[in-house]
Image 1 (tube, rainbow, N blue to C red):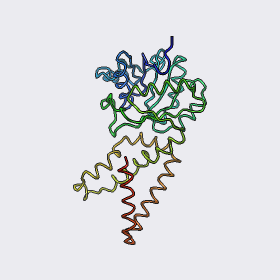
Image 2: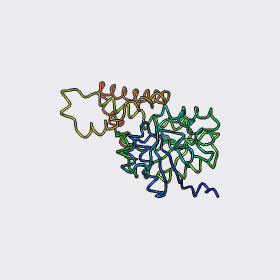
Image 3: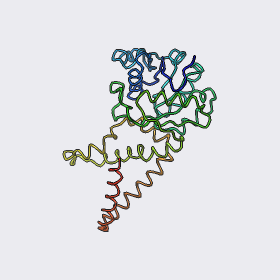
Image 4: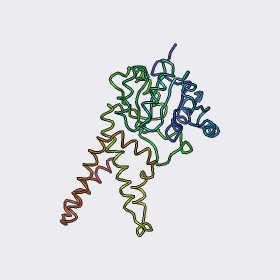
Length: 285
């Protein structure tokens, strides 16, 4: 008898892209379900053997068909501009009851592209675990990366209800807290809380010149931490979420321009009010 969604505990899981997030999903699932078998789909099986040796996955393969023919869940952990094509490829190679999910930080274009393939729609629930690091690579993967963190699920109108329930249960096994949004709402909100902050962090990093480098302190390192993230990955994110990012950049630029004007006019009262408002928002988290 097939498990109900509330009892769903996968026996076999495939991770397509064994990096920080994919590796952490693998470690988290192996901790929650010790009997699970996890296979990593990698570009080079010889190099991927290191993830078997270090205990991230149980086996590796370069073949989607070989990995996905008899698994319960496939997690796509590739750059966001490749997720949709990977979902469709996995849908064609996997069994009818397979759950396909992902870790991408943009959702609208992925869900829209997948919606063109009925076979993929029947298996895919888009997800974004809001966790990570400026570090990359499965060597930094941890079993507790998602514990207590929000995992946003963005089903389409076509997503089967039982598939969504199964996805919720799967992500709870990683320790995540489930939130459901539309793909559009997800991308709008993430532009303000993740994508534009990364660009702002990068802008601050670029302010440093040779003469000021020796004066860098903890404030600068705190605000520029995320600027150390993989530039190619962040370019793909910006390309996938241009509209929402442009709007939030406009808002940020307007706010910075207000500050510049207050500095120029010596309007310290307005500047103090702005700083207090920002502090109140930050303290609330």
